[in-house]
Length: 121
Image (cartoon, rainbow, N blue to C red; front, side, top):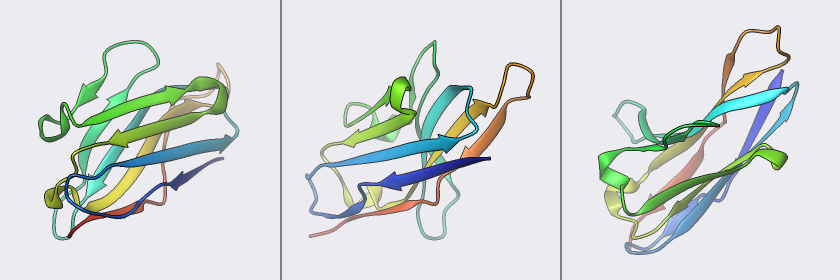
């Protein structure tokens, strides 16, 4: 089993910045894609950014140029640096990881518990 612990959410004024972190622990042999999703009230969960271990990082158009995803493979951690935050960025942010317990296990996906980000003056 894999556990994800998110942190860094909170209340911030428009134009402000926040940095989210997500630390994975448990039965992890390797992690492929690490990503962040968000869900606003009454809306579907949507991709914010994702970063494969190798390959191209993908961002939602609405956050390009403002958000940056990064990862520390040694610490099994993914970050989301958010700048120029807007009220429409208000949502619960979830991290998602694609992991293997061993080379012989299938890939599995795990979600964090979510962290609230509120952008308001």
